[in-house]
Length: 328
Image 1 (spheres, rainbow, N blue to C red):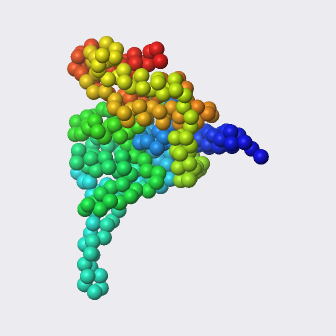
Image 2 (image 1 turned 135 degrees about the horizontal axis):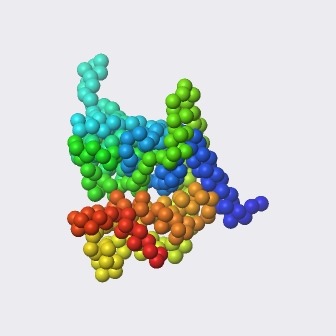
Image 3 (image 1 turned 135 degrees about the vertical axis):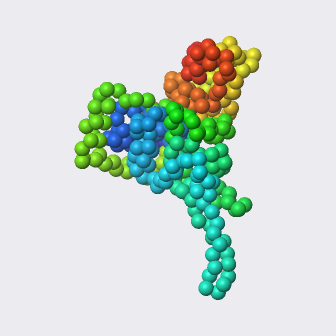
């Protein structure tokens, strides 16, 4: 009979292997974006939402569709445009009349009622429509005509954003940015990966992926991430990193001089969960300080804003975060 410790080790090993298999399956379609795939899986296994930023044609949309298939979850897509209305996302009530002449309202669910919601080019939606997702992302429910409606579990928003052609866009407000666990930058693929893309996408043969996980696997893995032990030194590193990013007496000079808006407690929470999920993906039983350093940029960069002096001196958020990670 296995001891409790052996059972825990087996549970962690099984979950880790499923995530590795999922990563491999996604890699059959998405070439040269290993870190993007890893960070996406880490965010989802932490129960968070993903903001993907990259130029057109680097497989952001394909990544979201592929991840949904591999994780065995239902998905819907919203193409964000300036004329998109909140009801187009949440749904609306319609007045119906039955055969007896009795009239009543019936709620017709919108695309937000899914497990994977892809918001394509989210910054092209109006602020009014963007705000329709705030409650959904935080509370996993929406309110229509004063009535709450629970969303399916798990529920994740995976939004894409184009860093160029900013004319006609509406930058996401700080409150909404803070609800995304990670901002993942999708860069151009390397030469070898782009060769694979050319060979794989210009023929009649289309790569197919299989579902490696299902709803229950995802929910149990998310619960497992929250149950993973984490050392006091790692907790201290997270707190030190995030709190040093806030202007004040304990902050380094680069923060006091250039940071206008700093991460709140959600930054610490995101780093804690993401570090655990990264350890699980790597087949380890507990996270390390190196995990915190590796994930600091994607978890914190969209939760920080620099002032005009930083722009004048060619300082960006990545420079600040690198400085914060020194000495951890």
